Amino acid sequence: MLVLAMALAGPIGVTSAEMGAQNAARASKPWNIGHRGASAYAPENTVPAFVLAAEQGATFVEFDVQLTKDRQVVCLHDTSLERTTDVEQVFPDRFRRGDSDAAKHWMLEDFTLAEIQRLDAGSWFDPKFRGTRIPTFAETIDALRGRSGLFIELKSPERYEGIEELVLNELGAKGLARPGADPKTPVLLQSFNASSLQILAGPLGTKLPIHFLVSARDAAPWMTIEGLEKIYAFATGISPEKTIVTNHADAIARAKKMGLRVTPYTFRSSAVVGFKDVRAEMAHYLGLGVDGVITDNPDLANQELRTKK
Ligand code: G3P
Ligand code: CA
Image (cartoon, rainbow, N blue to C red; front, side, top):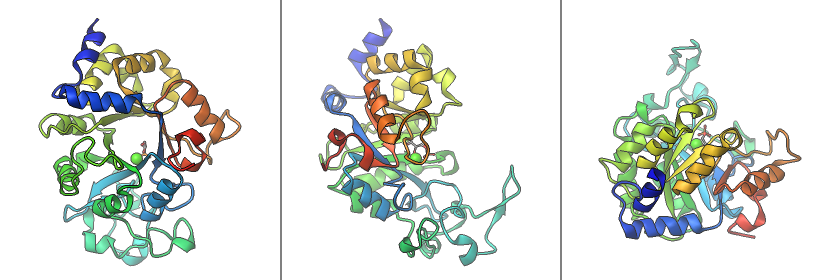
């Protein structure tokens, strides 16, 4: 009964018109969400990967946002720069020792935007991408505008006080801070950090759709009736690690009944277990009723899910 009442009332602070837009989105066909762009084929979280995902027919392009030392919003997955750039060559002395592993780490938060713009974020993936830069959030929006939706992950927001407001401000400056502002460029926010999403939905009052990312390791408390009710208070959907869909099937069914959209991660051709290939894996999960797939291979999603056939 409580669940039904919540489904009728909608998330706190959402008007009936906005619920209408959200319900329309929920009724749409499942989403093909390019993970860090088309990251099977181009360096993750770069403009070439983003544009390729859009060209391959991604409904949304997923990317990670964090802050530089001078509080500029940029796209990067790791909190440090050494895996995906040549920072060790360009700034050999600017590392910290890790808290847990004592290894050298070149932390994004220790570098200004001007400094990270000197880094090559493409060669690690393939020499043909030499000279590719870490994009700013604004550059990413400009690259994708009119081509794909934006599936924006606030990555490790606990490291960057105030990042929620900066992200909304940049969306506002581009005229994208409200649901439906640009039908060709829908916007969704997500994070593993519930507190960050509560800031977005609560004090900052965004009406943009919000997904709570849930890892398999953290799933148990969230996949209870109480856990789902907590999620429902600040989110319009969940992005669970894909094993949760089968290991917590009852909770996923409940979440969908509540009106939460379910978009599992990550489907990648390079890591398929128990299926013939990633196409078969994505088709299986879509058959279970999920509302989208977050994939490194947006070109291999069911043709019906691709914006370009
Ligand atoms: O969108 C889901 C996925 O991006 C979450 O994991 O580590 O790739 O950011 P990660
Ligand atoms: Ca991500």
